Length: 201
Image (cartoon, rainbow, N blue to C red; front, top):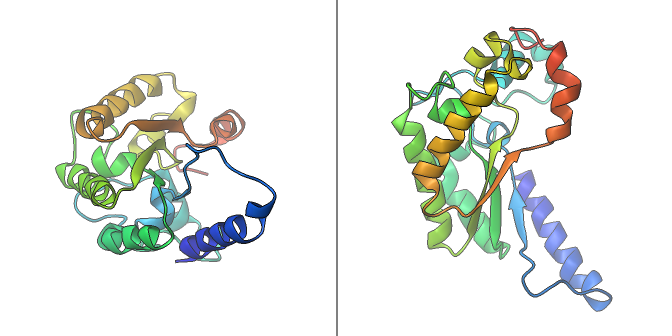
């Protein structure tokens, strides 16, 4: 729950120290953010496919001194507790990422995983029931390993796969999610993608 502690610290600073000198616009939203790999866990449950993070962490545990994301914060099983933690810090918005291989195990639109879609529907509905706006990051660095085996983002065909993936997100969640972020840390893709091989090294 380190992420919640950090958020509490931010709220404390804003309301305790900065409030006397600065003010935020009336429509400014306070919230918190995470990524799927960092918090969900359940790396191979309910039909989820392998991601490049899963492959990397399992092949090179020496690169993960703090452990891998196999369990992480276990948000896959404890999302209601996480939403209540957001309620406790008066969060108005929650930016979370959707794990592409959780809803499309191979990244292909022909192989959707209904259990993954159901999970995100439950997360979104729980937030809305608690007056928290969902903000979705479509891609936060957990590409389906199957697509990495095709060359990853260095292969132009990934554009078509991503378009299909985005269409699924809009179709399944667009009636309730109004804010989307396509890529996290977009500029990094150009620096590291050409050096990746199919094993994620």
